[in-house]
Length: 618
Image 1 (cartoon, rainbow, N blue to C red):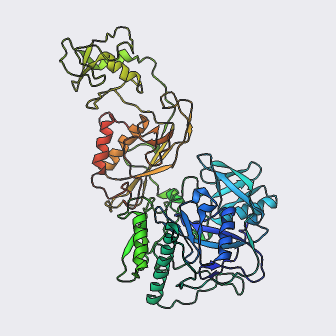
Image 2: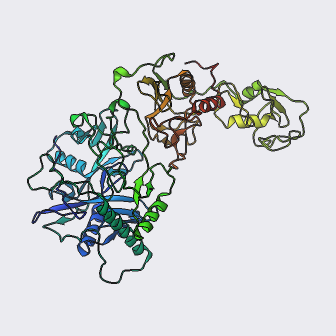
């Protein structure tokens, strides 16, 4: 199905205006960190339009109509959204669509994410879906928009053509977006002169005016230094008389002074966002769209170019998506505002983006890892060993101590010469509270009843771990949910291993129901970010790590169910103290290469989990 024509976008001093005497639906959109234009709600767009009619050079406080947008302000002159608490600036645009399209009718199409919440599609996708729906098509292929999804209207679902995974979608009626007819008076061009009237002296208005001063100073400096630009060409197939859209110089690419770029490299989309399809026209990624968060064979190559910065202009990082920048975003933003207000030119830049995935790899180039049989391991639900009762397990690894020393038991914190602190709490036949034992290898001593209580409260897998030195007795297993581990060789090198190919590991765990060994048995758990791709160098030590990771996977030690340190979400699949490298071509997050000590560190972590080379069998 062909993509519907988007509304004409004609920028005039940063604001788009429809042609004379032509009715258009106005949709305001903001550019997110994944370089995708996301629409504001119809209510917010009505508010912006009302402010625009009163003062085309003013500012819009979004919190007045949406409590979730309290920190955000739009400056209509610079066409940027400013977040007051972090200093983050994002471009905004005023786009136009046909009144008979979905936004003109107040129709919103949404998909259900992993958390059960509903997320609106981008406006061009929403219009495409609505057009197919009105024509009573049974299904819709989004490949023409660069997405590898099929929409089924009978079941109201979308299906990923690569993974076959389905999600629910819905069609919702909402407030229609604002309608405009004819032209609107042009706003004053940059830099803006002083406005008449006494300005408000509240902190919020002072901040807005400072932001505006920053934009004016930056653009004035740019115009003084930048050579005259050639007239932009008309877009291919554009209507006669239409103006070509040129990227805004206020925040294009990665810097305020933006050099022409081809195929910009972009960050990964959030979980559940539709991945770009490899069947985009000419086999190339759609310009301005993400192509990183997908398996290697499906991802198109992208090339990034650095923006040019005028000499003598200080560069301040304004936003680092991973929180690892040298300057806090709010500090960088406010510093830039103050410097610009003083008449000093400043270039606000974004920090480099991590390279998460390798270039595309064809199936014929994917090879098995030498010395490691197979390419896949699966785990199923755990079967508890009914024959292992706690007393038998504890006695197997302990030696009875007749005359214990007068020191603390580090489990109950009572003296070893007295009864266990679990006396009266836990009762087991044949285990008297005063009995003390010594673990065979490490020699640490505890009350026998204390060790029985510790084992009963754990995984009950027939193994025992010393609470003092963490020495493991028996074969330790974990609580990892069922899933699949794949591993193979790809013909690309990691940073620091130029002459070595790469081992790629792919973990995939679906969401499910927690078992008796998990924190909340019977409750659903989520699995965010799967499949997860990890990388090792294909050398002797890298293959050794792979063999041990396979053993750890089979013992269910790689993942567990708990609370995410990143998002704070509970009842979700998280890593389990065995670090992996998930960043292929950089090390901006600390989870990539080069890292000279990583292989030794992960071997030590595997040993701490009781996984070593001697008993490991691939």
